[in-house]
Image (cartoon, rainbow, N blue to C red; front, side, top):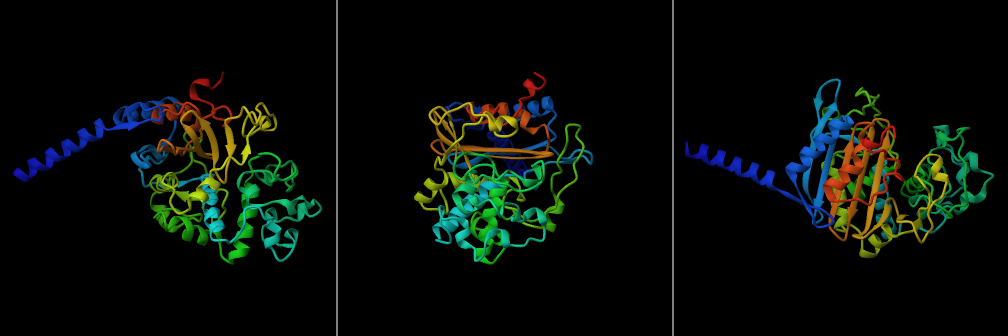
Length: 394
């Protein structure tokens, strides 16, 4: 009987501690964990977000990790913190860090033209999938100028994805190194060159350089059978599921699967500067290129409304960079049909947040959620193409 009473008392203490937990925000204000939980649920209900997982970091480590809603709404499968997500372009941030590991091992140089590492001209390589070849740019010798740095900071001149082009062909849209333009094609080009240098797949390289060192045991650029037990489905605005894509080929630009616990380990590692030298982290998060466009995607991506002197936005190697009164933050997003993710870290504060949703509606609550969770009022939601739920239709 005494042991039962002690156990109950212990549970009550734990519950009280969790309810009373305070989360520190970048402006030194705090929010109770219970209040944040209630606010998140309200935001999700208002914007009809199917499912969400979130992790907030203080002092470079997670202090609040929680799951909300459904992994699969039509089947009424609840979300939990071990649920596997398709991370979309979170993949690129991991790739940037992985490449810096290889740079520090002298495998390649950031500013050497990538063609220098290949034994034959780039367009001469034959791919099993026609969309992956480089024959389309054979006559445009600007491809010979593209470097690893240009691929990671999105100044390669290559499009985001050739399939989005009107004719479906790969092309170089501007002189490499001259401006920012988000490019998954640039990421894949660098992946291809690295795989030629190593003679092994990028998945194997990522496991060696990132996932095993950070103990990210539930993360892979390839679909694994053990993920079938608990994975999220992407949902449209009517809460119906999209067809799920089980990747069998690693794609550094967007095929990574992970859960909130594993990706939080990665964010914590970046904040703590694990696995690279101080100079390596300085290079990783260096403001390589100023971002001047009105928005990141769509027609406004071609319209500049900032100057290098006035923009708060820059790009490093796999991460975007945001200048704020609380220091320069690093961020990365992930988007596709049924999936909306955002992450941002403030190294000078030791504060970060990772948000992953399996809903087309997810980005409608990012502005409010960033403000409430960590006091981030600086993320440029309009540039990010995020439409807050209370702006929809305006």
